[in-house]
Image 1 (cartoon, helix red, strand yellow):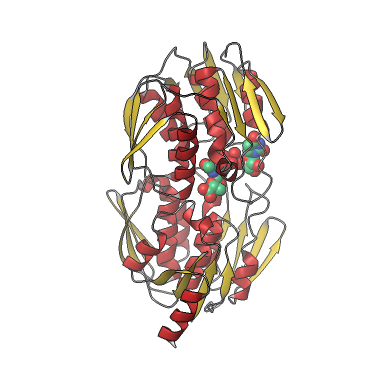
Image 2 (cartoon, rainbow, N blue to C red):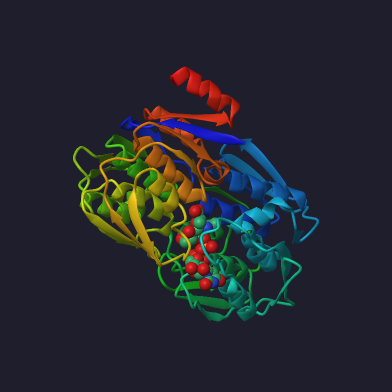
Length: 430
Ligand code: EPZ
């Protein structure tokens, strides 16, 4: 089992290149099954979740060919099954995008119920409501979600909660339904817009993605396309906060600054300097951090996927900060680990009350989920002394070459096999 060994204290300085958005790549890969033509996708992040999804797709006869590390060609004309019960697919949330995609194309799909990070109850009732509104039967049994329809017919769907997954899933199925679908109270995240752009490049007719109301006029068939995935807003935000946590100076390259506005605004409130330079954002942190308050919200609000990272930064800010998590009810599990590193944080319900400390101290820490894992790494990088970070497989789900990119910025971080390499590391550093 791999671990990170981190010796904290180095300010991160330099440039980092951001990859394609994981949460756009997953539905886009799944949506490639919706045509018999060949689809070419670029800027696909080489992370565990995208690879698990591509393996599962290959398992049902779809030709998935990696042209290079970030480009993939997909052809689904020889698909031999619409049942996906691959053991690994259970572990990723985005398995459910195969339901919307295959239901749209084949009018039937059976997929193992999704797993993903354990950050709260992750209902799929809005997905089901959307599929049923389009005329599909949906049954949950034996750990599978089974859907089928004689025909899919467009409908007017009001989402009871703003859901990225449900918005995208309904958009997928409705693209090949008969007539017009309207999704109200739709999610507006950049990856929702990216999936709509991808589908439109395949001949779909989707308007309004990025607003509360998405209008889809179903088409009879989709065709092949050549598409590049948008930069990852959350990976970019994580490196911006890494600069803040380590009092560094980082140029985050290949980003869409508009997608980062809520993060930039909060960094400026804490006293960091944030400047935009075309498709780059520079974060400089040269003075003591100041406290601020944050509430996670659907886009364009502050992203829940950045909540652990900003909490780590605010844990080092002067004064008392309050972070309210309004999307997932169990997303403060990492706080216990942070407290072991010296943080002064109390969690009450969905709120963390943070009294800033002057420093964290290195410790053995265990990662509970993807974004919390990245946040704990930031804490370890800023800490005095050494940290050993366990369960880094969670981080590898969504960050490509996280350790390498950090090392290029001056971080002292190494991946080692548990125990043996750690002993060698101790020998080298003692
Ligand atoms: C996506 O999850 C992302 N995952 C998450 O990123 C992200 O945290 C989340 O959106 C919010 O931005 C992927 O894209 C693979 P939701 P998703 O449906 O689609 C409730 C990461 O770290 N809800 O927008 O599962 C739900 O319980 C991951 O990359 C229902 O009640 O999130 C939650 O409270 C973690 N019924 C809220 O809506 C439903 O049918 C938002 O969930 C669906 C959701």
